Every structure is written in structure tokens, then in C-alpha cells.
Image (cartoon, rainbow, N blue to C red; front, top):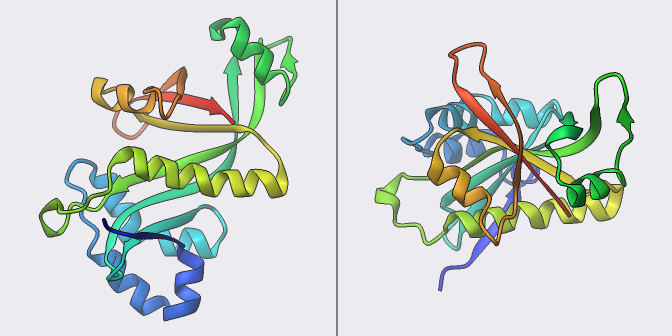
Length: 194
């Protein structure tokens, strides 16, 4: 069985230097989502150094990049009218409703980028559930240190992606959608509570 280490990109820069991290990231390939590939190769280091978002790398026992996830923190609005009574009760622990907008404004952890490296003929044993478990493990540590309890993400409106995020292991729930201003892509917004 393969062993994987989840490494914060800032820790990796400190350990091996920025040039080596750039080399490692240059091998990232994600044909299914070129936006993730572009972010990893062009912005991940800068965003981490500026504390906008921090990318974590899953490296195999040989130090090869197998997958990534990028975490950030952001305020989100969740409409009250789309919530089940159970979810509404849980969200009230983290926010109060704005009576004018009928929305809760929540401070949430954002899984901003999430993807597997498809270089090297996709021989990785990492699947989406393992990658999600790794990202939630990091977020649980952060939650323990600073509080919070809401995680959210956005994905394209594709049935296979939505089924993955909503499966019994990951347990995200749809709370809204948005249309990208740059290319009119529809993104589904999902959240889960710890």
C-alpha cells in the first residue's frame, strides 16, 4: 500500500526552497480541469505567500505529487428559505439571520481547489474520497485551534461531481449556485458542517 504525506506548500518552500517547489508543481496535470492546473502552476505559491489561500500537496513515498487541495477562509451567504429545518438549526449556531435579506452570513472554510495529478498516466492510488478526507483532516485541526464549523466549495454543474460531493462519506449539501462572470459557467455551491 502506498503512503502519502500531506504537506503545506509554505512548509515545503521552507524545507526545499521555492525553485524546487515550482519544479514539483510544474509536473501537475489536470486535463479534466485546466483551471486547477493553471492555478497550481501560476498562482499557488504567490497566493500562499500572500496568505490568500494555502495549497496542500499529497506526496507519495518518493516525493511525487499525487494530488492537491487549496484552502481559504471566506464569508458566505446562505438563504434561509432553502434550508431544511435540521440544517437551519445547525447553522444558527454559527450565524444569525439578516431579516432584510433572509440570509445567514457565515464565516466558512473554503476548499478552493481540489484535484488529482493526472501526470504519469494516472497511476495514483489516491481517489477523491482520500483527497477529501485529507483536506477535512487539515480543516479539523484548524477548527480545533480557531473555531468555526462550516466548510464550503463550488463545482461545475455536473452530475458525477455533485454525486461525489454529496455521497455518504463527504456529505456536502447544495445551498446555492452562481454563474461565472468571465465565461458563464454555472457553479453549484455546497456546504457541510463539522
